[in-house]
Image 1 (cartoon, one colour):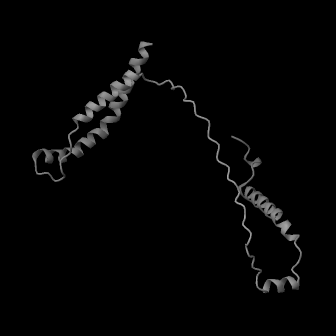
Image 2 (tube, helix red, strand yellow; image 1 turned 120 degrees about the vertical axis):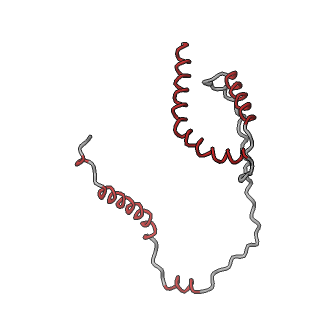
Image 3 (cartoon, one colour; image 1 turned 45 degrees about the vertical axis):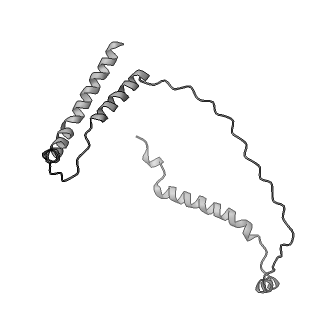
Length: 152
């Protein structure tokens, strides 16, 4: 890989970061150190009541600039898709037909024979799908890819 001894250790990296932070904080504190010392007259003035400013003059409200209107966007040309519009529409219609076939589930605890069979079959169907669905999907996708690439 590389020479590990030439890389700085975690402690060296941390101390470097701490040193940089300390230098930055010293740089921000140095202007404050240049302030004059507080004299007794300053201390007496701070003990006295703070000066109250009366606002009798009206301040002119600054005019707010209205944001510039963004230039109208040009619609980007449609990106080329992997499948044609006809294929997309055929897929949509097939899915719509499948969703129309879906039977609304009955209320849980249904006393009908169909409801009881459905409840008993759910775990078995889930196990069957868990075991076989990945292989079925992989096989069908591989067949479809082979069919598409064999044409070219």
